[in-house]
Amino acid sequence: MIFCVPKEKAQIVAFAPQNTSIHGKEACRVKLILLGNRYNGFGQLHLIGDDMVWLGPDSFRSCGDSFTSTYNVISMGIMSEPVIIL
Image (spheres, rainbow, N blue to C red):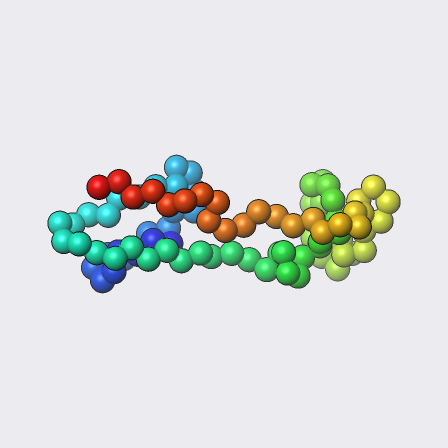
C-alpha cells in the first residue's frame, strides 16, 4: 500500500500496472507498507510442482517426484526499486 501522509488515503498497487498517482500541490511523505503471507515460514517448503489443486495437511507429506530436499520458497516483497516521477 502507498500512503501520502497525512492527506491521502491508502492506495493498493499490488496488481498490474503497479502504479498510482498522488494528487495535491503540497509536499508529502510517501510511506510504503508491504503486505505478505506466511507461506515461506509455514508452507509446504519441500513440495514441488504446481499441479496441487488443494493445499492441506496431506500436502505436507510430499514424496517421490513431488519432494525436494531443498527449500522451495516463493518470491515475495518489493521486487524493484520504487520510482517517483515529479
